[in-house]
Image (cartoon, rainbow, N blue to C red):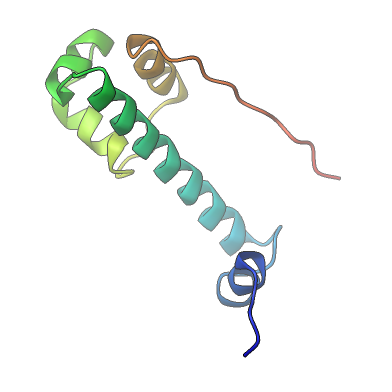
Length: 97
């Protein structure tokens, strides 16, 4: 039985890297990972969504939407969330040719 890499399957069913569909898929996946990370850290810090929202200055519903990737939260809101969680974040930027 032949096995396929995740990239091969994604290329076939979503689209090749650089296409609009693939870019949208990759961005959505990254947002989901950010949301999951925020939820995990929030729970490790023993905070409710409401408590985190108060620290950030947003409502509980906004924290829920961020954690569940249901919104395109503003970048500054994401930064505030990580600061409120006392979590260090690193972003990398890659230039495409």
